[in-house]
Image (cartoon, rainbow, N blue to C red):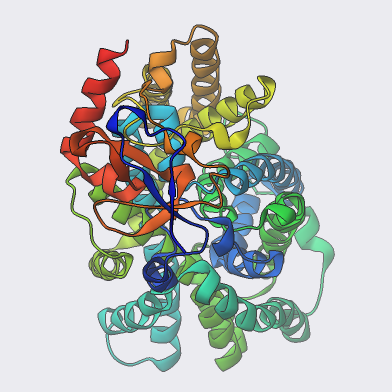
Length: 538
């Protein structure tokens, strides 16, 4: 049933067409789109089990098995385990905070970044996130291709890379609440059996020794920092996990917010993902026969060589779990970036195919020779984003501002927020320079220095903030025209679909008719008219 909201209809403002049930057209698209360009309404939120199963796909990334072993070769097992333990605490605290906030607001990383950086800056955040995850798709996909090539021993790597892309990309065509949760739930037991089985198999074939627990490098590398700090910073370079957690946590139900924050996205998850996976990697690296220097590829080939078909199955399942989610996240952020910058708005399934093509082309290169360096630079940018996000959330909590008072609508935020852009820009430049010219010592210190600079500058900016940095004051807000902005659905005059009033705005270029978040983001005439209306009220 549709009703007209007449609370603020003075001055010829057209009434809102309000309903209190989901639009069938919106629901039909949401199965694939997953509200990627919109706020997730509470009716689309899913259970704690569903969110956990979808998110736990990250747990099985072979990257976490191998990186622990690699760090241990550099600084020894004891220092590695100390640094990883500290990372577990840091990851757990940070991601519990952002998961709860994402749950309370229903925003994606791209949408929340508008708050921090304005319309233009948020587009860069979406691009950074999308490209970074695409690199992980390449790295994790290459593992499966190498395992298939090693096991079957025929046909070139280009063929097996194509096989991997062709089977993994379609797994991301549907969303978190309609497919990824089930897929990862079905495959989780196989991953756990494979993880435990690899240890049991190695002990049965090579025997057991405690030497792996006390392993130390023959000659200590000149890292310029203690070994445990080196280990912690290596894992700090993977704080893109915070962005990933945000885009999954937005689907949680409000009543599950505490459980999701403390368990699914909190410390228990990282005990398994970081610590246990790393310990298994350290043990295997010190126990089984591996050809050449330790890398993701050589470690996987060692596992497949030891376990045969069962090792191949474990690698296949683990990488399928993590890369289905990676394809999903990368496609969502590419969709946001191109819709916001060049106004090229296409369904998310189209962007899954675009990512698949890019990933395959990158897999044809010697990807492992350059991707680590690229991720090192991007990691510096990402820790800056995390620092600014935490500072803003902390500021809102300190001011006792409700999370859903957040202003992310494109007609009510400026093109550039100097507080966020300034903090992120300065921190990123410093971090990039340290990585580029600082040698090993500079690379080790770049992430923590960038994090501290970004957080400090943003906190100072908040202390001297101007309202115009964060919001553009305009009249006729649909949020104030309904009794419950989370339950009332308002019809958009452009797409004629109905979305929750929380994300809706009034279009000053079309007689102040209601307009949804996605249409407002794509419409230059709307944004120009909104800027003029806000300027007239300053």
